[in-house]
Amino acid sequence: MTRLEEQSRRYRRHHRDRTGAFVYGGGERAELFRRYVGGPGRRVLDIGCRYGALTRAYLEGNHVVGIDVDRLALDEAARMGIETQWADAEEGLPFEDASFDVVVAGELLEHVRDPVALVGEGRRVLRPDGTFVGSVPNGFRLKNRLRFLAGRKPENDPTHLHLFSPGDLCALLAGFDEPRLHFVSSRFLRFHPRLAANIIVFAGRKSR
Image (cartoon, rainbow, N blue to C red; front, side, top):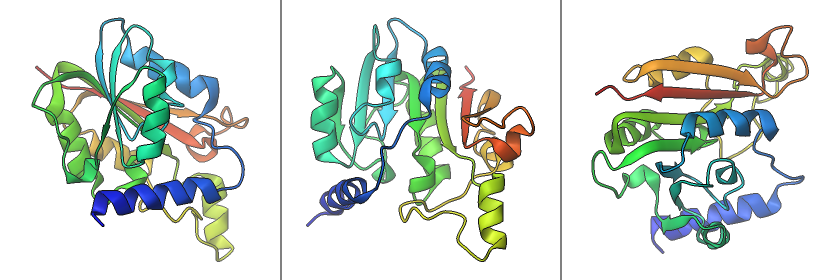
C-alpha cells in the first residue's frame, strides 16, 4: 500500500468515526474566504478540499482545483464542479510555478508534518499578487489553556500535529505582503478575540 492510499484510509476512517458534524466555521468564516478569493475568473487551488464544504463559498464563477488524500471525498467534490486531483500535498504540489491566482488551505496546516514547507509550496504556485488564504484552530484559546491546566491535552483530535498561535501564523506568512489575521467563531469574541476565538483566518499577498 502506498503512503497516499494509507492516508486516504486514515482520514476516511477518522471522519467516519467522529461524533457530530464538522462545520467549517459558519457564515463568518465563509464570507472571509469568499472575500479573499474574489472573482469571478480566478484560478484557485484548494489544498485539502475534502468534499467541498468550504469550497462552495468561492466556487461560483471561479475555476477551482481541489486536491486531497481522501479519494472518496474528492468524488463528492467533483460532483459540485470542482476539478479534483488525488494527491498528498506533503509530497509537494503537483503544479507548475505561478499557476494559480489564489491558494486556499482551510483547516489544513495543523494536520501536516511541515507547515512551513507547505506554505512555501503554496507561495511557489501562486502568481505575482496572488493570495494565500487559510484558517487554523486557535490553538491557544482559553478553552485549550484550561484543559492544559486541568492536566488534559489541549487538543483531542489525533490528526492535529500542531497548535498555532497568532505569532506562529505571522511567522508562517513572513514571505507574504500585507499579512492579515481574523479571529472568528465565538460568542465571546468581543471580550478578547485572541483568547475567545475558536478559529483564526489568515491571508497574505505574494509580492510581484
